[in-house]
Image (cartoon, rainbow over all chains, first blue to last red; front, top):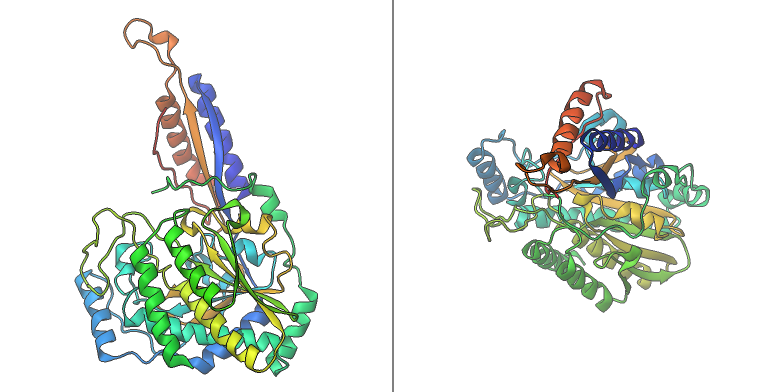
Length: 198
Length: 233
């Protein structure tokens, strides 16, 4: 990422030199990749398995199918099984993430959960991904996700088996205290309060 | 416990959807969500990390400090009537939650209220720190939170993002990004009388665009460049 940033700067400066113009730059934002903590993820995942998927109604499934059919998306029912515990590295670029939680995850042991409040194959960052976001599909997914989060918090503050596993995690704070990436890229504080990207 | 909470979930998710505020403009969203937390005993700090719409909500004493966060910004031009399976904006051209960020902070608030109730009833030590992902789509929040020390004393962070699926991820991966604005400055001159005295910023933009495109072939396969022209001076 730092290398790309430097490449951009060099190209901009070269373009300015070639045309006799000048160039200024402003770093608007940065996002590190994800560094998810496995022991913490395992604790959280146990709760995902306990809570399980929401109970979708016929109306939920019918709406999901209508969104997919009407917008030429692959037809796939709302999911009825939780995913296996996932390695971000194994997902490759499919893991996506812009600044979802990357910068924080390099500084604090972090677990990232995805919760089922949207329709399969609805394109994200798109109007299609907004169609279900104020419907019972979204509400049910949030309730399920909130249960997992509440249970994980309680695991972390109690002396259950999961709580004992987390004690070492809390004490040690493994190698996620590095701030090298942030210091290398983010060069301004506070960030520029703009919203011109569209 | 979950029946009344489910009603609160519906209210929060739908309300934030209706506010539909893009990055750094999440004023009504932040005011609404922090009001709920404040009414439930959380201490609110506004404007963290120098970002006007950012906030933290803290509660508890002793024990580990657990951060809980998710994003709350939306995207420009994605206004959409909810519950409709065809494209129809509520307000044409207006922002909308086409990434589902209206759901994450309500989830975290719901979880925090439930955990708090159990901890209070059973006298369990522990502290919660809720935070919103401000301007996530602009890469505008979290790196600056870290630099400002928001997570300095935090023991663990729990994060959630909307998806069609239910699961947990660990390990190193995903996309790192940097967002930079380059502004070229030229020199005005009469195009017929003395063009030799002028310098064109647009020329520089076009050369940069061309150079980026030639450079793409020689980038690592996981690296991508996106160039958007949005102003010339």
